[in-house]
Length: 249
Image (cartoon, rainbow, N blue to C red):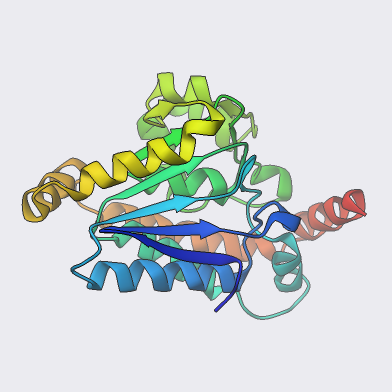
């Protein structure tokens, strides 16, 4: 496990909080594993009715930890924790709510595609710079984003890497609401607590009907993962990672 993922209980609400401020909540393999375990255990626990994802003030997540990916790109092993989390996320049996403030890059954006309600702040910008890193979309985003935004807006986001400000994300239906920074956590938890009061079986059926069959989504995540692994070994990705790490230094 890792101290960078904090699990809290607020009655029937399980909060999964990313807590790695020195790296702007960039996700390591250990963090992915901890979140997958929390979702699995929460789904199995009748006392949990809703999962909530939160980050820290000004940072939901800067995306994948590139040092992890660089290790894979240069011949290291590992990375299955990422795909296990994405599959667990797609298959989660209980409603998921997220509160996003500030930085939301890569998985910091695509995680929210699986949530039933997402709240964001005015300073939040959703970014998916996969292609810029020599990679491809993940978390089923190549299927879900075109369904929500339309193909051309999806290409601008996933292909060109254009950022989507919170107000535009709300207008497009990508998120539920935009709230002030100092109200984000309260609004997110209040919504989750309201969801938790609903008759659980009726809510599950309604949620399943709204989401439809997950077979296509799970298949797409698997296809993306295969392409993503291939790209991690590519010269383009290696060069992009090295350039990014050098800029940071």
